[in-house]
Image (cartoon, rainbow, N blue to C red; front, side, top):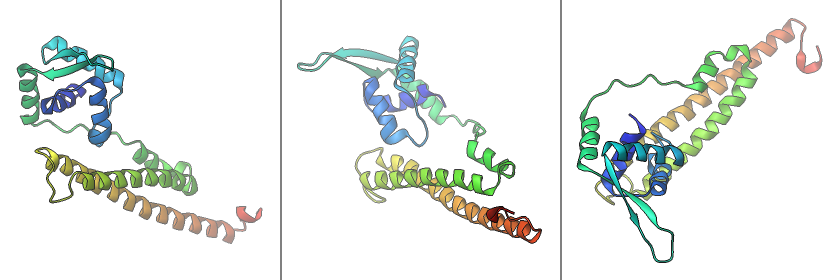
Length: 197
């Protein structure tokens, strides 16, 4: 997937300005894609050059004019072709898991600190997903033709965040037990770093 596919998908729903597209990313597409405003405008320019969209300047009475992007039939065909095509899933790179993999090189206490921060972040993601599910009409609610599909992605994000929080809890607990056992072994050997030994 590329940023152009995400933008085509959003524009296939309704015409929008670059700023509105950025807001939509922050509001509803944050689980699977993120982009800066400059990336969005650069990609919109490339897509317009390919004929996938057109733009119109709308003049407003008391506000600055705004450029509104509209998907073309060619852009819609590109988007639907991508949507229907199965693609091999890209191999994910996961920074925190790599740190855990090498965690023995920094020790349980330091790794636990990083895991606690990652857990806090995942709790924020979990809470945001739950709030967005509620505001999207909940499990049985209907607010528009795409609301159920948005809810599906939010539920995925909620499940993933919940799983990561639970995994962090178990891992932090196990690291604490391992750290306590290591301290006990050092104490038994006559070296107690907590008491200057």
